[in-house]
Length: 80
Image (tube, rainbow, N blue to C red):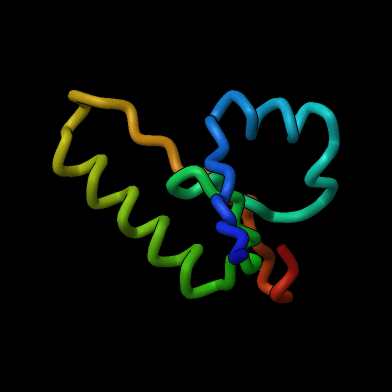
């Protein structure tokens, strides 16, 4: 007999409850297509390009929408 494994797909509500309960600790994780995926820390190139993309979108939307970037900020010393 062969067992069939079915992965659990998490909802956004499940994910938020896990965060509130402290189940993920200090892990950098995101919910992608129902799966919790551990993410690498954001590096300087990613932070720079995200900032430039935000500036570009703000310019193109010209006040028709609010654009907010989600980043932790970085210093010139490479800390994040």
